[in-house]
Length: 281
Image 1: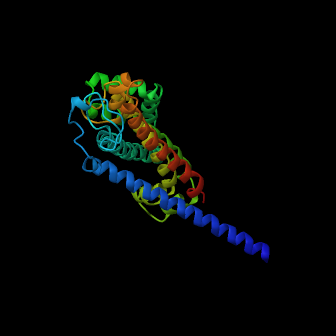
Image 2 (image 1 turned 90 degrees about the vertical axis):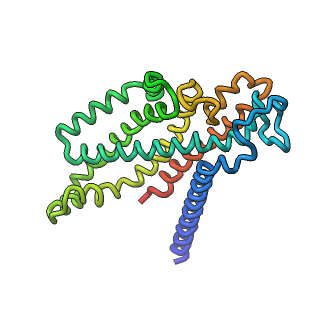
Image 3 (image 1 turned 120 degrees about the horizontal axis):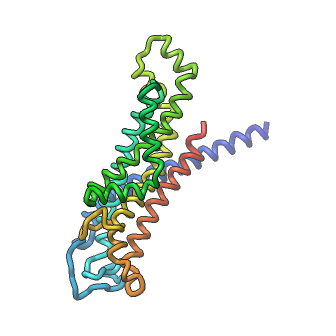
């Protein structure tokens, strides 16, 4: 009896730890979303205001992150960078997941010609390194944040389509789907009310990891001059613009680099944590 009580108590402790971790993750997401939406309002100075007299000033009380070569406040530009770096990544991942999930659901459920076409298209896109293909597409369209986002959107849906298609092809043969068909439920109801909810854990993990990848990809395109246009504050373009000062004024690129690493690592950690603790059934 004591052993059973001990087992029950340990399980309760694990559940409390899971709940605590979930609340921390939710709070962190809300905080990052808040910064992405209101980062420009929280900036202590105008992000594009140039003051040549204080150019390349080290971190101080007035400018906690120092200033860049044009005398602009690095802290203000980093805060504004939440809106131009994190928010587009989240929007792109949402759109990619909607497109890829929809295609994967119908292709996996119905099969046939639609499935063959979808798989051949995804094979073509996935045959090339995604970032190199994004560079080619963004460069061909003329660069800019809109074209860079469109280039990444053209590539982002493929993983969702493959994952969802594989899941649907297995689940559509299971008893609960067959029973739903026999009971007279429509295909749309079976797809969206029975099959889709069963793969939400997989999609949540994939979306979380994809946000981190999308942020780094957007920053990479901006670093190469194919993303956000100067003087718009974006972490990738800030790193590119200040790379020449890495020895004389390292704060100009260290802080945007740290925020980029922190945000991408957070979403990777969140996806991994959810996969390990909350997707176990």
